[in-house]
Length: 101
Image (cartoon, rainbow, N blue to C red; front, top):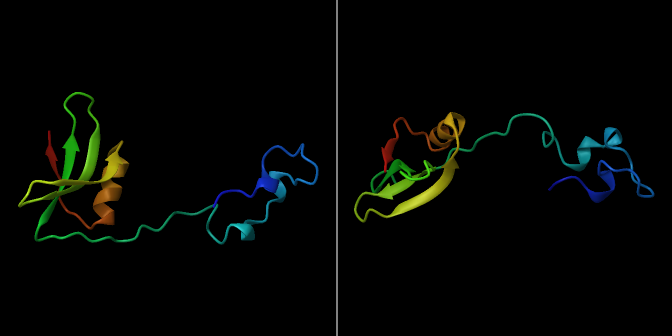
């Protein structure tokens, strides 16, 4: 949703309030502070397996699911660091991940 235009950091415009006067209720409870709750998502455990696909050239890592019958890879998220990997595993309730190059 973002910050409404009249609550920008620059208060030079006529009628704008400073950010310290910002009403948290505009964005809703927990929108500005607090931890986002991760929702558990599901995948087809019979036909797909969780995989991290790694590029041998750039080192880019993408988490997703590989169809065990067709080999088709479905990208879910980019893995930048260990916290992204943990978030992916927690999101889909996964115990182990394999890497493919």
